[in-house]
Image 1: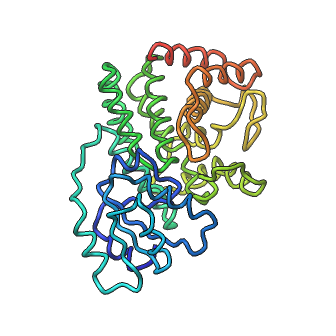
Image 2 (image 1 turned 90 degrees about the vertical axis):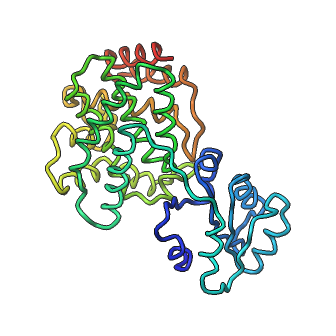
Length: 340
């Protein structure tokens, strides 16, 4: 963001995203939007305007150059949205922001908030070149497990727990939270103890921490990755382990193995080390199944959610091909089918 916009937003609860990530979920969970629009070098202006229009109903302020401002003013869908035209008078953005509604935060379900804070801070640590502060993850995981055990007893409460996870608009962080929830539900189904469950959740929250070094334009690319981009993404397990080995506190070896090996397959076709069956611990096998299922059924910038039955069919096919542990897949599918 340009410096005047960044300065104006200081002290506010702000989510900074690219236009292509704007959708109904975002529009339903923010009190207002500040859009810095520049259509001078946009190839498909109609598409860009359609993206802005997805904020329909959300009080929106545009900051734009004169030519962009004229285009915005001609679009009936954006009628009523203030457009601040550069060059701006001092304090113009702050004054416009003062017209937006005050934020009223809906409390997050117990455990989700602590996990989000731990993850957000960890990604910020990587961006700033600091050692990851891992100490908050253990207590956050215990609270997450306690809250989920209560939520899992009632469909309505569990749906609220899921909704709180889906309120987070970073696809990578939302995926980690979803994997943690599905892993905890699976652990409950298997009868794991509270300590084991907390360890599984902590591993799930951290399993993709290596993606903190992958550029967002690669992580969220809507099309097929090229060879160089694929190398960057496939480096995230080993980079994640490296980041955690240099963290502020020692990390449990079980978690390090999950982080490095959650893309390994029993037939040796996975990465980064091409491990085979005997070299892959049970917790890693469990997390691999949960990770694959969660990725298939969730919404991503480059794909739509897959129906649950189709995702289960893929798990079974991968088991038949010798990639996944058949006993773990069988129990996981049993849990999914019981919960509907």
